[in-house]
Image (tube, rainbow over all chains, first blue to last red; front, side, top):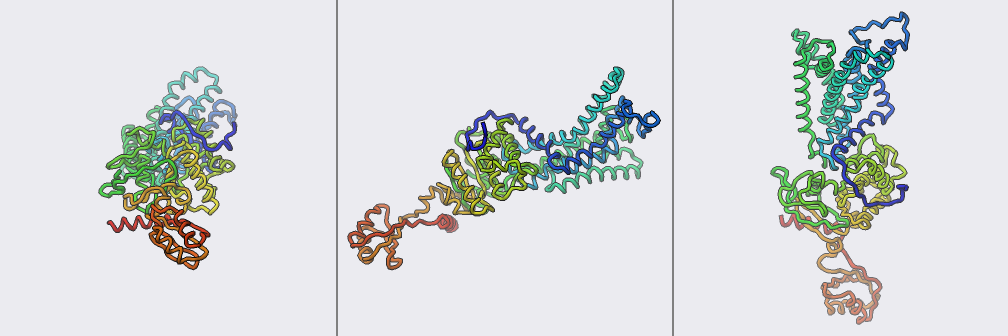
Length: 293
Length: 301
């Protein structure tokens, strides 16, 4: 039956659960980066760390034969070895991942709430069957979906590819204790980054301000942490960088060798403090009063 | 119902029924229209009194209330990056409609508001009229019993305004919905609303059927007669007319009490040997009613 020319019709339906409504928000946000050519290209470019790992995997498996036939020299131990956690964490904790994630978040996730606010879209979404906090939860979940493609799904696929290309049962025995912890670390990192980025977006009025605030928070925080820890020779101060604190926590969960010896406790405390502060800011800012002007 | 924001009283002792049909909600900025809307949507809780929607249990949650209320905002509150279909479908899913039904319903409602052909175009590229229509589709997608339209004809050309008002009138007439039209454009209210509520400083200063309010306290008629004006005037006065005034050589302005039927007017003309060429009932305009009600309220204050 066609839907045109049916006119207006009465509608009866069994209302869906809150979870389904939250999922509708998240799935809409998952599609958001792919709605324009520019953001699609940006998304693909920001997966560079994964492409790097894929190349190393091809070399490791012998699919690509390089000149000498020996594995390439890598600065970080285990970066080119799919049997180590470091290989899978490259798309999460490496300097390239820092650059890629900061850029991707700045242009996509950190703008979602601010963009809706600037377009007065809150009047549409908050006057329906979802509380603002549940709607915000949907936005965070959408951010997790967007970031998770590179940070959770990619390591998992790399491992599956490594396993199938190695054809070695010992590879499975070696990596099986490692990979679940890596994925757990990836999930934690993705959740924290998604929450912080969405919170930044929820606290400002315009999408551009949200992008700038995100870059200042991550890149500025990192620079500040670097300078202060060098000046004071106090390595714990590196934890004031949100990115360093988050990645150190991820490495601790995954059991990987850290690039900087930030104490795990300091990193975890910094991450928890950031999340709590962001949650308070969101609760203060996301108010029904701004729905209908 | 009384609504307070801290010490500020936005709505005081408002007591009104919104019957099914089209109801105009009139008032100046700050009169309390938006506060009533917020209460309807469950966004604010009345400090005193209550608000109930037919078919919704008393004490229902705000989310449950919103299932029965459709809201078309004044501002272009549309989701960025989405096309018409995606916008309406997402709105449907956020209202609790299952995904498959939401998809179908979004198509149906977009066809109803005459955006069927343009539904896959990005909303950002829509004209003002199309944006208003997609907002109307969003307000209607979950089949609410009350539809609140905030300045729905803002920025529309005469054709777009006529089309949108026709849709609004059809909702009330053909589907038994209560359509609350909040607008400053009084001719729009005159055109589609059967009832009106006038608010001033948080209080209801006039309410009722548009026909009753515009009629005023007495019936006035503009009568055109061919001749014998003096005789007609005398006959009308003796027939019980409250006032008879000459406008020009042919037209009289006659005020009749409710007790005197219109037939008496024809009879008086016949007695004076004149014939009636035309008879038009004079009504107050809605603007006069609105300004009069507000003026009365200010006088009382």
